[in-house]
Image (cartoon, rainbow, N blue to C red):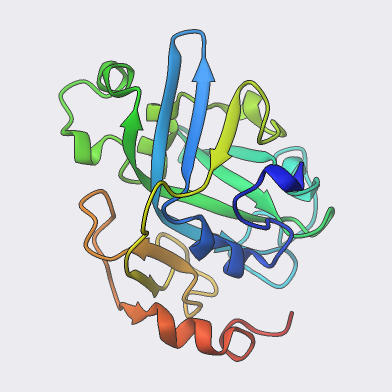
Length: 211
């Protein structure tokens, strides 16, 4: 399925993540389909990333992360929210990119029903909101991109400026600038300790650790 990906998901997660910005992720179901233009993502790796679910090895919960790239990993956060991730790197590497935010560009009526009373810019602002807007659940773990359920396409036009900074809501490896977002986009979480993406991209090995 690699030929159907707009980004090579076999790369390191922290290199895949910024390439996903501007891509369009669609999840379909009995009620219809909702498509997001991805505006904020976070990279998580495996055994060398203490903030990752896969850091201590495989479990029933994180098994999908250890599968081949190009599949979904969905987990329950705080016992309530469904967080959507795209598995990347090589089979068994247990790396993934968390979808933190996006703009609904198709299926707005369905998104509005799923997020009643919420402004459109906030429909998919934050991982839990992404999960609700796309109606994903843990049963979607292992679903392959390109299936009838979910697919990923490249950007429809210029992506714009990308910023990078520390991941949010974690206690370990907080110094890694592995959160990426479209600068100035209204759907993105409030930024903290912003680092220009050009500085990160110039030397990813020295910043992110050994590959």
